[in-house]
Image (cartoon, rainbow, N blue to C red):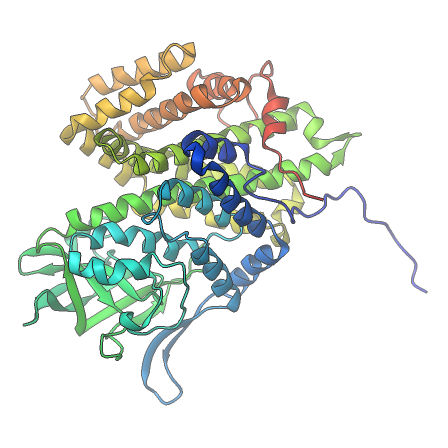
Length: 547
């Protein structure tokens, strides 16, 4: 009989079997704040079901499997016929199918659609982040297609459908469809106007054939793609279906899949259009950027939401682990220095979630004031929130010590995922320059932003000083482009501070304003002033198991 060498002790139970939505007060309170009272119970129940599914053992296993078995490209079948198909693990389809059946591709067909979808996106992304890519692009393709009413009438019911059909087929024979996007080229990167893909008109109205190479094509097994190409009249937006109306495959050559740092469950590809690739024009020739910009804005909001989700899951894991783990005679969470770290991380997570929900509510508002606020706030939020994601996840991983560095903890996957949203849909410099562009061209955007933050004036002296300092920065145009990152960071922090002062508990707002706006903190997490009510901040955010 083998001797027992030890008994496993001082290990936390798995964070599984809990409601991801109900355990997040920033999310639940945001929903209560923004949703009309007569719809609140319905939305809570909807998000509660999704939260229970996201926290279940099944969903966590699907996320592990989809990343352990990344997609595989099959360019040809066994007989040598070109097929250009990507094979995904069944767990990917389960994740994506559940998301579609929860309406996470659809913000357009019901009241408070953007807010409900954004909250659901934050919840479900915590089960697995990679499959959020086709969800995001499918949702975001709708406003671009509306520039071409005939195309919108054909495709919008499929893209907003709550039915997931993974097999390719003609649009007319499908109950639901997904959309991807292919804008980036080797020579251009974020400079999409440098695209060299050519579009030659055919005799049919709005029909073209494309020739070119796209360096990044997201979700290559989607049913259709929005692409940019140079038509006779200039850079133009096109809808490229994978399957033609007669049932034959469009010429869509997948050259290879990208071997990425993270986001392993999701396929990103290089694709070629060979002069026979059929597409339909979306919007006017030469208006490609203007046509697709609404899609870009919607996916940028999803970058904010996904980063908020990754941060929340990392912080939840750290809070959960330290609530059970003991060292030096006390639980980790009760030790002052660890509590400082946890509170600092919780502040960053709550600020990100609160900002994401406010932007989603502005989309639903639909007023000119809302539109102008989004023009400035979306790129500013995309810049700042996505950049905070990586250091938050890295610090949360460290809270678990060596356990966090082990793949089974799930934190390494989150850490690999964390930089993605800062790069996707324009990296930091692109966002900062976009804010400058809005300031120069749309004075109403600044007015809307100042109105938004002005509602909190007088509530906290550190916020008031930060607003004054930001206005001084805005008044000085000398070297503004080189200072753009500094300015946009301040704008995002002031907006977050304004929201937390108005809506968060005093302990949260006080700690945020002291550290982020008042300068009373160091460069690393865990350097908050010790006089703050850190225990309240930590206890507020800790997820609680249902059992």
